[in-house]
Image (cartoon, one colour):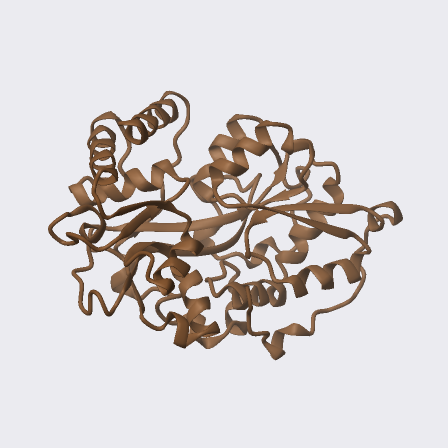
Amino acid sequence: MSHRPLAAIVGLSLSVLALPAAAQQQQLNLFNWSDYMDPALIEAFEAETGIDVVLNYYNSNAEMFSKLTAGGDAQYDVIVPSGYFMPRLIGAGLVQPLADEGAPLSGREAIMEEFQAPAYDPEGRYTVPYLWGMTGIAYNTETWPDPEPSWGLLYDPEANQDQPFALLKGDAQFTFGTACAYLGHGFDCVGKDPWIEAAKLVSETRKRDNFVGFVDATATIEQLARGTIQAGVAYNGDLANKLAESPETYGKIGFFIPEEGSQRWVDVMAIPARAPHPEAARAFVEYMLRPEVAAQLANYNRYTTPNEAALSLVDPALREPPVMPDAQTRQRLVSTPSVSGDTLQLLQQLWNEALSR
C-alpha cells in the first residue's frame, strides 16, 4: 500500500533507548493487521535500538485468536487486536500485563482520557490504544447517487434488488451488530433473542442472488473500484487512504455511517503471555507512544490517533470527516460490547448456524 510521507514528522529522534546490551540484539515479532504499519517507523525503531523487527500479518481478530491459541502466544511479541476482543484474550490467558506494577509505561500519559480506562481493560494493565476509527457502508455513487444512510442497503431486498454486495468477513459479533441495528435492536445488542433474529437475517441475506459473499474491508474497496460489488462494509481510514492515493481510481466510492448506528472501534497494542522478547516488546510499545511516532502512524494509515499530544502533528485532513467524525455522526457510533463465557459460546453457535442454513 502506497502512502504519502509527511516531511514534518519523518525526522524521528535517533537517541538510543536505555536497553540492556542483550536486548539491543533481540528480535521483535510483530503480529499486526495487513497494511497497518508505516515501514519507515519500523526502520527507525531498528536503527535506534538494534532490534530486528519481523512482521507477521492477519486479517481478522478470529484469525489472530486462532494462531495465538495454537502456540502463537509464545511466538509473537506484540499484537494489535481490537479492544473489544481483549477480554477473550485475557480470559484465555493469552496476554500479559504491559509493565510491572509500579513501573508504568513511558508516554502513556499522552493518551486521551476517553481511552485511559476502557471497558475492555479498565485498569489499563494489558493494552495501549493504537488507532481508532469507524465502520460503515462503502458504495458506488454512480449506482446510488443519494442513498438512504441505512444498513438496508445491504439487508433490504427492496433497497437493493439486484446490485452485487458483500458483508464483512471474519467478525461474527460485528455482523450481528449490523443486523441488530437494522432490526431496531441497536448495534451494541447482546443476548439470545436479538442474536437469533440477527442470525436469521444474515442467513436470509446469504441466499439472495446478488449476495457475493463475506469480504474483508480492504478487499471491499478494491472490489468496489473494479465494479465487482456495488456496496459493502469498510473502515473510514482505509477509504480515506485510497482516495488520497488515487482519486481517479477510487473517487466514485462513497461512505456513510448508517442512521441505525455502527461501530466506533479501537485497536490496541498488547503483549502475548509467552512473548519470547518481552523487553523488546515494551520498548516498542513505548516507542509507539511518542507523539511524533503516533502522528506519523496516523498519517500513514489515515486513521485517528488516540494520542492527544500527537493531534497537532497530524495531517489537517485527519481532523475532518470522514476520518474525524462530526458531532452528528459521533452520536451514531457505539463501541462493540465485550462478551465471554456462555454468551460467547452462544454467539459462535448462532453464527455457525447462520452460515450453514
